[in-house]
Length: 338
Image 1 (cartoon, rainbow, N blue to C red):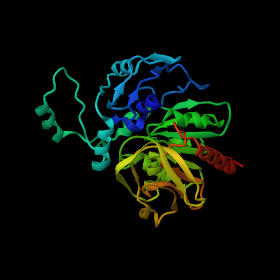
Image 2: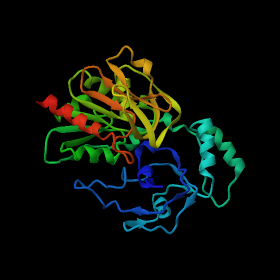
Image 3: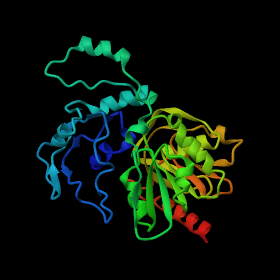
Image 4: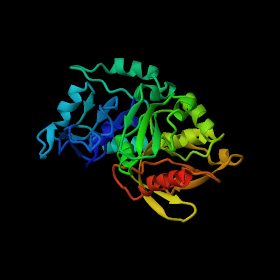
């Protein structure tokens, strides 16, 4: 019902057709990017543009009502040249996806649809996961956010959500946002007190340079936090392995269990890959969290260093009850600095 501006602008959805099951979308329109926090980061979007390749909903609200609305959902999609479709049974489509798994698809916009042409194209659809999608959504130069405080945190941008930036800056650290392929030497030149590896789209094994960089940091005592794709990259850097899930985890209702405390947190997720738990057996990492629904890996941690990752998004949008993970990361930084 809510959160479609955040979903559409989430870089982790880059290259995908997004299907939303709630029957009415667009009822509160689209607000302005000018509504920001103190650092100029928009509050109601997760990046500067729509990231999905196509959008599929059941019913479009063309006459929304909201005090902060700047344009309708339809106007926004047209402005950014992103095709969308409404008027179909998205819940029935979701049932098919829940049986067959994530599928390649075509969203064709035209005055007349040639079904034979569509069917002929289905055999040659490019799998976006065969490309380095992270390269497209990462920044191409360093961006600095100065909170007026220290210490410094380097954020490796693999397609970072604005929510992660907001959470870090709210905890009074300076953030240095660097491209995904930045070398360890360049990152160390900023003398970071901690490092965060962000979320992002696609197969983590395509991020060869990022994995190499993170592997180098595992030889140091610098605190490190991986989020979503960042968690997978951390696992690969440690010597583990990843695989593609049949369905993937999406939306805001996934229960995850801390294997130490047995506490369960309701989480926001958006990923199609995860870590093979058995691949960590001969590494310095252990599985820290699992998904209650399908028992897949939802988090890992180093056995002795302040290094950990989670497969979900503690920054939301949605449940924020695991936001303390950012506090744990900052605490680890301060302990090392002291």
